[in-house]
Length: 543
Image 1 (cartoon, helix red, strand yellow):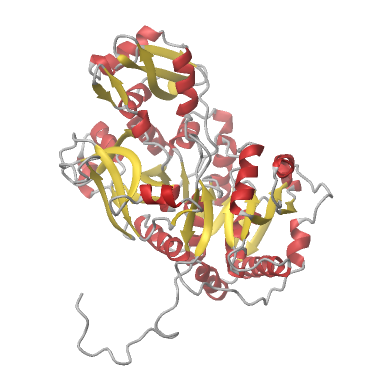
Image 2 (image 1 turned 30 degrees about the vertical axis):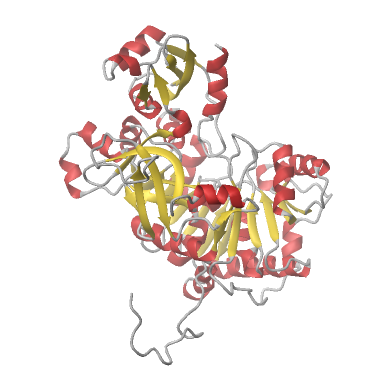
């Protein structure tokens, strides 16, 4: 845009430019919603006035411990109030929050501690052994442990370390926040899953986190006073940034430490939960829950699902329970979800199965994103919007990471061509909606033909006995690769013969796409509900 002829006196100043940060939501909530309940865990309830004070005390206590702006403070906690408080308390003293997956092995935790140069780690009592083992493996200076006891869940304080409540009690509730001088300053450091090597450290900035909260509130049509249930782990993409968002809406966060069907249904009924996010496996868990694990509720619960494309059967089953489901899509490198499957009014008139198929697409970009497209992997040009031509999803916008910490080579590769390369393979339909067909590494090439494992999985999920499934490539002398299906059955279901399963897929798919091998077993999963296909590929290769 051309400069105006005379911009004299039109400079940025403290009155007209303040770096964006989601921390401002909590500062505002203390004044606008002081007595509204912000946090619920068992019988513990904190108002926004109390939450603001606790987060400020945490930041003050960390500063008193010598934590300086730019230092890294880690957590090793499940979904409990302390990790949510750390989302504000750590950055408000200028530090960078590093939330670590509680299911990682000690060696990987040790790598993250060392790579991030973490100074302090908040550790839930249940995970003290993992933290201690990780520290024992380190050659560099380890982080100091602050223990977060959770006697309500059966994990009392060990007595070996300063306990979290005692620690924040040393902080000053009037501590002056260290807000970012530049909205490009880092707010969090999140490590990727590391299934093909050491995890990479994704650096996120205050601006991106703030805009994620705005975009999510708008796209999810949340409104004031939502009641949100933490099913997405708060160590995963900072819980999709929902913890930072809720104070802007005067919302209530209810913490769910153990993601069982019984606990989720109970929380929905007791707290009148209005919103939650989770992987399709969470929805399948609720759909297939035993009668004794269910609790009745009479309101609509809004759900966004991500992590893997949900099958139309999953969306249909969730709607029957009272859930309004929208698929979203994103990565750790994009702070979480950056596309949404907006449902136009005319979809309501479609035949049910066609509507559910439409809803199983990842959709279009969130409003805070600049451009999300599907491009040819060689030319980098957009693929035709024909619903057939495959390409790679590339992403541009303010909710894209700064880069990978201490890894300029990987950062340059990720941003090759001027957009973030997702590694996800998709098509784009005439209406502009994107539909994922696979990860690059999950495409099955059989006799020179590409097979989408997602397409095969969606067909398998429509079988009445199938609770969960995954399809991977199995080496084949004749065809190179053939589809191998791993299946979890619904409780009480009799296992169909492999021939029955193959016949079911053959009724819907071309013959070369149908599984040639069928295995019944429990599927290995990450803490966020993603199926670990790399483990299944090992099994298939050994068959």
